[in-house]
Picture 1 (cartoon, protein in one colour):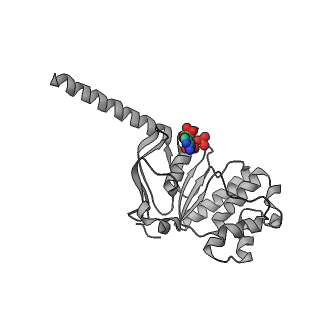
Picture 2: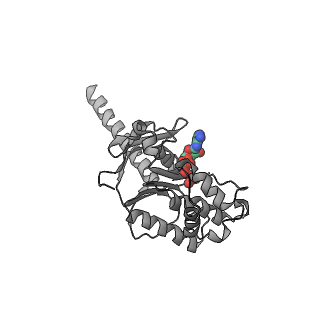
Picture 3: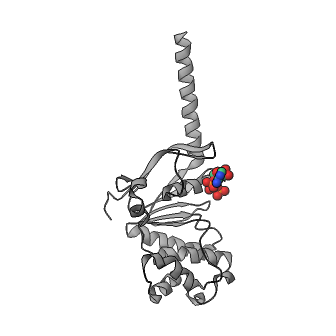
Length: 232
Ligand SMILES: Nc1ncnc2c1ncn2[C@@H]1O[C@H](COP(=O)(O)OP(=O)(O)OP(=O)(O)O)[C@@H](O)[C@H]1O
């Protein structure tokens, strides 16, 4: 990874329907850095993560990767990215190993040993031959996150990765995150939970971003009222 391999969020404004969620959001995530997105329910965390992946279009602003707009990069950007959202694509009828193989198949054939190692990383290797439908919620989440250990992607975008995980499983995931950051990877994740990382993490609070935009709008409205007053 080069220092110039950065993910830039530039003056982003996202809306849902005709309702603005947040605006004026700018941040840069560099190799080895994690951005923790927080905010109240409905503040737009999932919308922001989906926008970062190119799954939703921003109303204004843009996302840039390695200095280029991601809408121009298209597949080149997606090849560097791994998104684990709420809908994690786990198929209940398939075994854990088959699920991972199916998710990795777009990248070419996957060695059984690599699947085994990924399951090992999330402490599910003993259940590799069981159908995924028998998993508890926390195990199901860990299976979805096993993709992080299997697929080699630079940017991880994770929506609430700690949901349903017990303390031990949270440590398994923070270990994965730390190793990724140590290797120069980038992470953007949302979480209502706090977590401890050895690596560099910063935080963005969407409620504050929204409040700051509101203050800017009301200051601009007052300034234009003063101008109007002087003009009359
Ligand atoms: N497809 C959609 N059409 C219209 N509104 C939507 C759609 N998806 C989400 N919203 C609305 O956009 C707002 C932001 O939703 P989003 O899922 O991004 O919030 P969030 O911060 O991730 O919430 P939570 O903490 O509950 O997961 C919510 O008010 C939601 O109802």
